[in-house]
Amino acid sequence: MSNRNVTDTNNRARDDRDEVRLDDRDDREQRALPAVVRKRPLAPTYGNRPVGEDTVKFIESDLPNNRPVEVSHLSLVQSNLPKHRPVETSELKVVGTVAAYGARPVSASNLEVVETITLSGHRPVTANTLDITTSDWLPSNRPMASNDLGEDSNLMGYLD
Image (cartoon, rainbow, N blue to C red; front, top):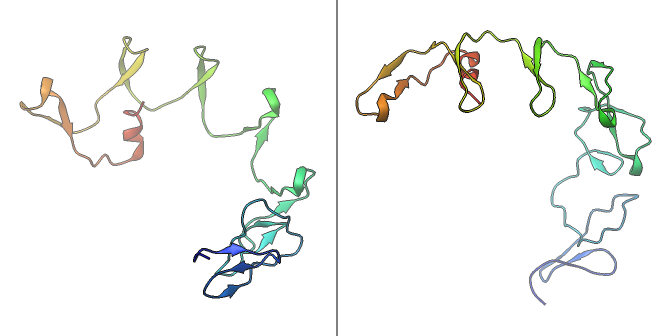
């Protein structure tokens, strides 16, 4: 017999060196996979699912296999989306929509747009707020700026 762990018919782990008992939790379903030897204490459970102590509150659920449903503090609005998908309220101010690929929202922004590039799909070009230096050794005199951008909103205008 090899040194790897195996499970005998009494649902106990065997090893060449010693014998270790498996977790004997009540109401556990038989699994098709081999049993696992636990060497640390078990976490608290909700049904047969581990959860942290008093970190999650659950409500009663009619889901299959008694799946837990966490209490939510989301503020939702009515929607007619397919499959009853929820829509959460937010502080985002929508100023319009783009019809390409569905009605995508266009949100208000503090970016100062000076022009758009139409070659790649009407991408905005914003006013430069970075302290940029140029160098002759970069191809096409590409600009260089400091990595310190200050606020995150300064960077958001440059991300696609």
